[in-house]
Amino acid sequence: MRLMVSGGGTGGHIYPALALIERLKQVEPDTEVLYVGAKRGLETKIVPQAGYRLETMEVQGFRRSLSLENVKTVYLFLKAVAQAKKLIKDFRPDVVLGTGGYVSGAVLYAAAKLGVPTVIHEQNSVVGVTNKFLARYVDEVAIAFEAARSQFAKSSVTMAGNPRAQQVAQRTNSAYSWTEDGLKDGVPTIMIFGGSQGAPRINKAVVEALPSFNEQPYQVIFATGQKRYDDVMGALAGQPIGDNVKVVPYIDDMPDKLPHVDALVSRAGATTIAEVTALGIPTILIPSPYVTANHQVKNAEALVKKGAALMILEDQLDGRSLITQANHLMNDAAVRQKMAANSKAVGHPDASDQLIAVLKKAIADHQK
Picture: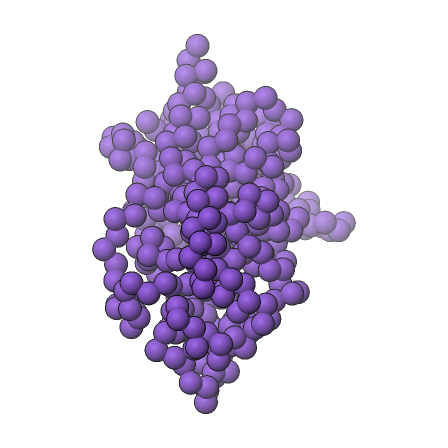
């Protein structure tokens, strides 16, 4: 298969695309891939590091208020569409996949106008602006949350899940040992992770809860975020940190560690939810209030309604609420087992295969 992928700006658009590519190359080793991203997106670092060819273009989003910048936005969009058409004619993809972000709007629009099979993948429960725009032009839509289906005025919408789920599910035989982090194997472990940059409110709550965490029979691994590690350690100065607690800046081998985690505290991003449901990890979700359309709350609510997670809204988060929910999970194996089963029941551990099937359907329909 010759696959062109476009998605960028945030890891939530990029990592699912890379997970899909990884699986496609496993089943079809001769697959050729071209990734098209934005000049200032995270994809400029992540995609080349993954070993894939990257082409970039300049794009930007619309301002909500009246602004001359919107004139520039339209100009850049039209310019990007022209660039995309040239790339498509040169690369000759069998299908073009968009995973979100402004750049995918130009690329998928160009592909549709050239009559190339097109698919968009929506990772969140609230559909992004770009995918709403593209829905009328593309051949197929794949979703990761059932709540997104009704937001597309289109009959061809397929529940595929998020490809990161299958990528993580394939790593369940990880031989990782907690001794590498100064903890113990065989002890129930909760991981607290606020994202690569860390989350100040989560970090503050953990600092407040630390004296209680020190006294628990379970162990805690807490990632502060690279840029916030020194601040957290400064706030903890003079406080004893128990042998059952490990504070680290970042967790860079997450797929290897997650299968060994008994519970997780995290944001409610689409990638995280895909991973924890694929593995059936009991999770305390703390949705970020700083995202478009408050979609992380909607993501979290989808799991809470299924008994697959707990949720603490950020304005209700402090040391007391955190330790209360953590103890509820970690000190009752039966509660964890039930939540784990519920979580796994809503997961999609074959998400990449499902999305590949959608890509092939788009190709086949064009060949009829």
